[in-house]
Every structure is written in structure tokens, then in C-alpha cells.
Image 1 (spheres, rainbow, N blue to C red):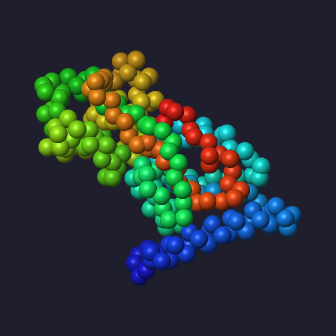
Image 2 (cartoon, one colour):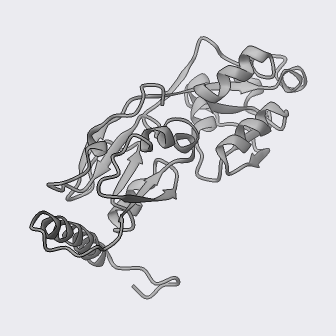
Image 3 (cartoon, rainbow, N blue to C red):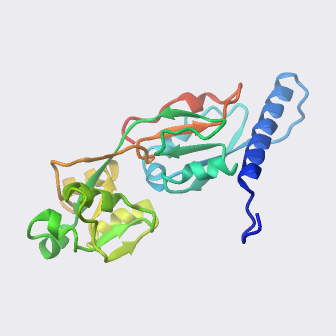
Amino acid sequence: MRVKPVRPTESGEVVVRFARQLARLERDARAELGLAADQGPVRIPVAVNADSLATWFLPALTRVPQDPPICFELHREDEAHTTALLREGQVMAAVTSSPDPVAGCTVRRLGLARYRAVAAPGFVARHLTGFLAEDLREAPIVTFDRRDGLQDAFVRSLTRGRSSAGRIRHLVPTSDGFRDAVAFGLGWGMVPEPQAEPLLRSGRLVELAPERPWTSRCTGSSGSWTRPPCPRSPRWWRRPPPKRC
């Protein structure tokens, strides 16, 4: 496709994805037949979102058998867009919020990711003194990047779809940095439950709507694990992560 940077066409993406799957199958077959020379470790590129990286994903990788040796190549992307990398053939697997499999792949449900709408006590005293749904329409927010629609979705749930979150938006593109920005009072935000709970207990954060916990499907916000089929796929493809995504 004649664009900058150069990208394959839709047909080309199918060919690239198939070629990578075929190369993996050939390598596995040669190894089982005893024909493979030492080709080094297997490289497995995986697309995963930042909140999964900061919570359950890396501990899950430590349980992967290393026979044969495996090198992980992690691509960070929003969970709503990780399947695009899979479709383009850039990765072999993806943590995604989409339940729909990419052609030639399968999907496994991982679980649910829980978020808390939180803010620092001082921020609440300055910006959230009235009716919560109305105040959140104007209060500053912290977002991960321009694709992060979690805060907007939460406000829409409070206002029955009439409004989104405020226009003052601080973009903080790391999971730990996002949590810290909220704790320092730059804005309110939706923080993964495992990251929010210690700060809620210590009093550094206040939950804005305890009666409305937010569950996202993947983060993997509800997690779906998408992988190309392979007769000798390592066992970790089939093993779900801890329930606390």
C-alpha cells in the first residue's frame, strides 16, 4: 500500500499472517523429526494492554515452560486495538476486549478486569462537592492516551449517555504513572482495582462511586486471548491468568 510508512494491503496482511504461522509449523515439525539444527529460542510477539502488563500479565509469563526456550516480544497497545496487530501479522497473540476472533485464530475468555473511579481527597474537596454526575462533566481527568475512553464511558453510565467526562485531560501513557497522577491530584480516573486498593486503604485515594464498580471485558479488560492455531502451541496459551485481572 503506497502510504508512509509502507503498509500491506488487506490481502497482504493475510499472506503475512499465514507465512508466520507456516514458519512456526515448519519449525515445530522439523524439531519433532529431529531435523532441526540449533536455531536459537522461539520468538513469540504478543500484543497486550498497559493495565494487564502492570497487574497480572508478567507473573503469568513466569509460568511458561522454557523448553524449548522462548523469547517474548511484547507490543503495548490499547485492548480495543490489539487485534489490529494480530490481523496485520505483527503479533502471534493478543490480549483484547473483542470477543470476535481474527480469521485463522481462536479466542479464549480470560476473565474480568475491575476498575475503581477514584481521586485524591484534595481533588475531591476542590472539584467534586456537588452532584457527582454533574461535577464529573467538568472536573479534570487523567487519561492513558487519546484512545482511552474508560472515563468517558463511566460518566456516560452516570448520565444515561447524555454527557462525557471533562475537557481538561492530562495524558499519562504508563499504568503506574496514571495511578500516581490521580493520587497526586491532577485529575480523577479509572484505576485497576489491584492498583487502587492499597491507596484506598492508606487514604491517598477516595472512591467516587463505591456502589458502581466498573467491570471491563479485557484489559485485558475482560480478557480474551487470541492465538493462531498450532499443533504444538506451548501449554501457557491454554492457561488463564489469575482471576484478579
